Image (cartoon, rainbow over all chains, first blue to last red; front, side, top):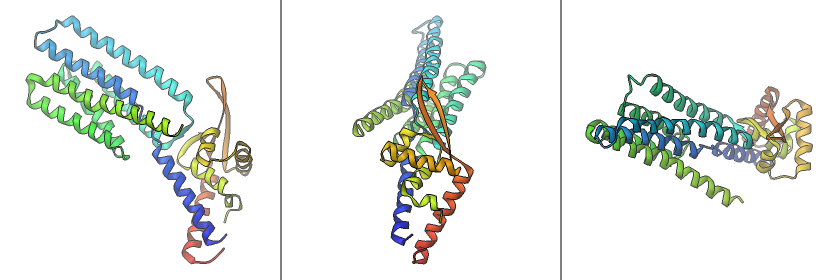
Length: 195
Length: 94
């Protein structure tokens, strides 16, 4: 083998490895659904504490949870079917996503005495920002912006308790669901570009 | 140098599988931009050498062939790339 040929082969390897590491599917739809669900919970607790709605309205949060869980299971099964390659990065990302979603869900439902009302919303903002910063570490700027928005909403909620629910809901809608919409649009644009 | 990995397509296949649990035939074809027949022939050689594993299954009632890198394939790739890097550094043909 000549030097020129070796250089070409190494270039090919670099190009393929770079392409492989860029193909992370973050599942924007999960962020939209769980972001909206968490925002709904914070909003309902805020409206309840403002006296604008009565306690039975909280069942809406339960219905939202049921929808989010059902959507997550069905959509993940669809994605698993059409997946053509499972990279280590994709596997690790999905592990982080399911761990964050699952642990927060179980903690909020199972330890509702510890995390009632806005504390539950805060828990969702924390875990969502954790996942977004993890995605951001792999070069996704939109995820970093989303994570920052969630942290800001947490701090605003802590210092302005009168509007804590609104702040947390806005953080989840803009940071989490907003990131989901942005990544779905980006996926769509990439699909159009590559035919 | 590893004779089997002197082919650009076979080297590309191993590189594409390096950071993945598995990849389908279609995904490899898209990565390497080659014809089905050519890719199938190169994949068969790598399977025969024990560098990659082949798994045939049905996904959503459609057949799918998945490939994954073996320990032997990973070791061969590392040694081959190391040789090429040494060749470039030394300044002469092997």
